[in-house]
Amino acid sequence: MKAVKVRNLRFTYNGSEVLRGINLEVEEGEFIAILGPNGAGKSTLLRCIAGILHCEGVGVLERPIESYPRKELARVLAYVPQRSEPGFMTVFDTVLLGRRPYMGLRPSKRDIEVVKKTLEKLGISHLALKPTNRLSGGELQKVSIARALAQEPRILMMDEPTNNLDLKSQLEVMEIARDFALSGGTSIVVMHDVNLALRFAERFVFMKNGEIIADGGRKVLKPELFEEVYGVKVEVGEIRGIPVIVSLSHLGLSEEFK
Ligand SMILES: Nc1ncnc2c1ncn2[C@@H]1O[C@H](COP(=O)(O)OP(=O)(O)OP(=O)(O)O)[C@@H](O)[C@H]1O
Image (tube, rainbow, N blue to C red; front, side):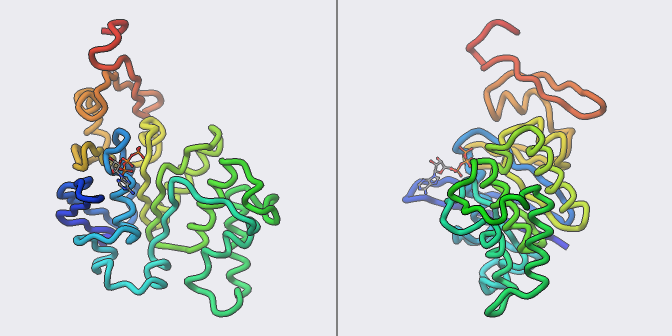
């Protein structure tokens, strides 16, 4: 089944076109990384697919996104924004908000169980009773991811989830996204760290100026693509079978590695 289908998607902020005819199909079980320079339109695309921005041409699990009542959409799709606002609520209660699409007036035993398990998974059980405005940036990011996982969605979308995270936490979050896809869910992650994306994702969508420039598996990772998308010379190597991108110079700037 197609998790997401985007057809000829256009999006305009105050008259300026930011997405120009995007076509994208994502199968259930895929883990895709959306990459590209600042301002390329990655977050806007993610927010269109998540139904936060209203645009025509987005299908989720073979249905137009606008046909979903809000609660039903939240059971199907979870979105972790680039930044989340901290507040007075505790970590536990914040993650419990992820159970809202399932809850009646009070949380059930299962809701509480899911929250506890999710906190454990993210390694933040010890923070359960702390208000989120007393967390570090990385801790807050993990709370945001935990809340999305507690939603038990079929599609997990995260916007730069590894920002603010230390090396170990970056790997943990990417493993979570990969395991989510391996267990039949769909992970769509916007990232800047190309090497981290290469290490975990199986499909790469490169955007520039509101368009998709390349879309595919490791074979799309050619130096010419990085020159076109980022204006950077790179070499593509391999360590233990994992592709590694080494940036050499800005085009036209440093002569050092030419
Ligand atoms: N709320 C907004 N109002 C007006 N313009 C916006 C708004 N949000 C984003 N834009 C513009 O839309 C374009 C795409 O932004 P977007 O955040 O989607 O890019 P991005 O690829 O996610 O960038 P980054 O990697 O820097 O997060 C940019 O030119 C940005 O200035």
